[in-house]
Amino acid sequence: MAKLYPGIAFSPQTTLAENIGAADTIIRVADTSVFPPAPNYATIGTDEDGETIEYAAKADGLLSGCTRGVEGAAKAWRAGEVIARNFTAADHNGMITAVTTAQQTAEAAQQ
Image (cartoon, rainbow, N blue to C red):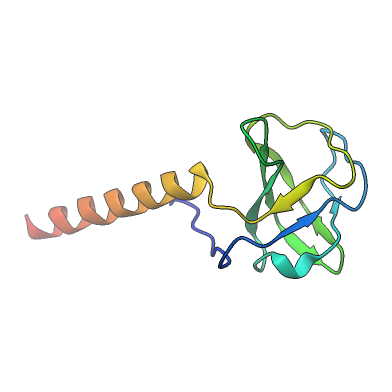
């Protein structure tokens, strides 16, 4: 089944609170209130060189259990870089998969 996570209206942004390396799975952020409950996606960066991560938990000031490079390459980022819950290709593709699966199930039930 496709992963479908809630978004957050207007995609509020925060910043990385400290530098992270490409293999880090705990990401400290300035404000976790801008993210929906875990699990969910977040994007680091603001252009085509960005990275989508999936976080498994959120607590005051950090996202943890992160899967890096869900979209884009996992890489090092500097403190102050923008991070937000933006709409991603993973969201879009998940919706396509969910709708297609539901449509196929409905068609099979009619036969």
